[in-house]
Image (cartoon, rainbow, N blue to C red):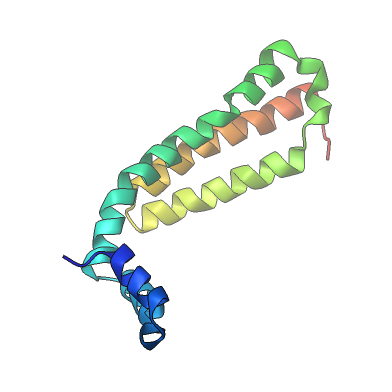
Length: 129
């Protein structure tokens, strides 16, 4: 059975196979090819996990903003967190329109977290940049 590594090694080892590397890359990137579909199946669970876990990375900032360091709210950028919230909203709409649950669920969580940051900044720091 020929593996990708052996094809690439053969391509590097011989000048007559100089296009091998490019052919392998084109084959892997070709939508619908067996290798492409296998890669999608492998990375789909990782994408879902990442999409759900990543928004929770804002929990420390939210806890500091609401619980421990409310006096430092003016140090947070209202514009930045507002842009994050707006971008999450657009992704939620995109996911809903395309019926892609991983996209709209993960971005709905992001929207909630980013909105909490925006509200906390407005409550504790006022209009800041």
